Length: 270
Image (cartoon, rainbow, N blue to C red; front, side, top):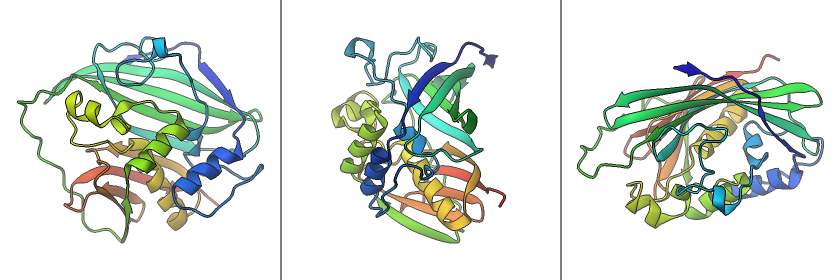
């Protein structure tokens, strides 16, 4: 794995309470946050948009690689997981700064062919203090081979203390894409999903699933100091996402028991 060092890519935002409120409405929540309130964990995904003109957009709807993210020579992108440390609360209505770095890149060969790995580090600063550190793991892959064997699904543990079922539909996917300014076509373009990337339906955003798990962990464990998640297999818009927790371990699965995401939460010291 190659370590990368360079000047940070910086984006600033005002953390408008209306955007957090719109996301809570999309999730069916009744809260109405206001300026000065703490931002819920991972809601910083709604901010720090990096709008690019059409000429700078790749075939998948993301900004073209070769800027912050190096070109790995592979067309398909997946958010494979992440690690977050929450140091101090971000406050709504105040300016904040996101500093992004490419921390490492690597090439490997998996059972489906070559894989390119990129690890980004994002630091969210507000009022001169580091509030959130996020490591984002991206994986780049070749286009799917229709003759490749179907992978054996990983089964979820099945020993959860509690579970909740989320019926996710294309409307929620559209709203999350809009609120996060995420142009990835696998979340809204069904023809592209099927014909180019080989999915049977629209793909639920990995960070949306992680967000639901973080909100569940916060409700049941209290404020978080750390959260780690890893995507295992996709959830499609026609499937229910089942959120499960046992102690500080959380996961997302389908009704057939297929494991889709696993996570670990650490409660903040009081």
